[in-house]
Image (cartoon, rainbow, N blue to C red; front, side, top):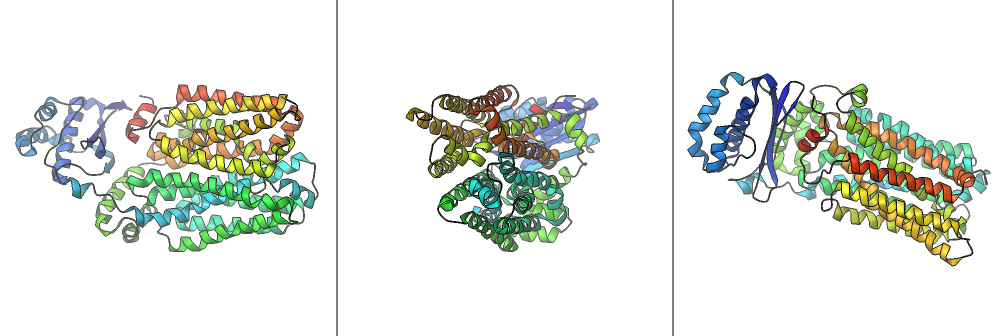
Length: 564
């Protein structure tokens, strides 16, 4: 129970013997009515829920009214609690106007087998895989200029100009920033499927321009167009995967996005290996990216539209048909009930930017945007974008280094999947940023040793790979998973768009300024700066980030929002 804005908020959670959440409801009433009325309402809801689901028993726990304590202490069949239920209903006769904020149903005791059967994951799996093509393209285009950058600069006439080399990288990010601003509007106006197809078109056009250009201006135009597609695609992919996935595999399906991004980055590094020995190979690298983009356009024609979007558009029959494709006919009715209740809750009011920045949600917005900012200021994307250049300057084979970077990144992402729900989000962030700081210390030490010393070679490689590994274990995947958990459902889409804009702005600046700063400051000072940001991240996470492992979204929201 919690108090806010003159209301009393109450949550009901029903669990099975293993502690799995099977059903929950929450509501609020005017605070002046008092906690006794709120607790009586909780008891009433619990009894109605049990009757509706035909559960044979129900145990109520927590700070409850005396009648609720009786039920809790006896733990008897519902048939024996009839007089108590009648007393509650009489007490609540004058308070039947309460407002239900949100309802989420899952199922429990009594008819346990029938109510807790999960929809088959195989039905939604192909739709999710097609959506992750966007994440693959995201990783691929981030790394596609890594190895070929110097060859591109020679062929297009800007060799030796570190600022223009940085522009080739950063123009993509500028386009992504612009695309991300409008991604939510596009997805809501035309639907999730068409949003995927629309984001693929500038990627197809931009990659074609990059592959055929003969000057810097053409390269920058192509990269910007690709960036706009990348700005729209990944947010829509996260939204789509969440909306089409059954609850019991939603976390696993969400992790596919991170894995696909790693595979795309690794693929771009591998495809770039022949660039130094084959004339014009960098053009092939761009042409290759048109294949998954074209697949996205075509395959999305056969994928289900988001039932959530269809329901919001008033296309109820179509939403029901798509749910049948995704969860099976036996689960459609329950899914439609849940969908209707959820959508009514989400449509209470409209979120304004001023509310995010100055209202009661400002704290979670601060946490989310700062996490993304520190993620970028740690220098990770400088490693991904310019690892080839850095390896060459350190006297290390760039081909070998890039392959190691890609494999290490993928390995760390796999490790993170196994640890996310065991160690928890906060613990992974702390260990990740701490390890990244240590890796930057190794880089500083390597830069202080003469290149002719073999020890500098091993120290540089070790520092670079440790940095990538520790990033992939925590600082990379956790923010994108943690933020939807800490954002209340009403502001989730708007808040994610705002935090992603912070991500892209800093991503752009790091990509643009890394090489000039490396030339002017030297590696020791620059890596020391990155190390400082990693240590700042450790302190910030320790003080501000709430551990969300094993907690319901309602518990997280109550813990993070200030009581007014």
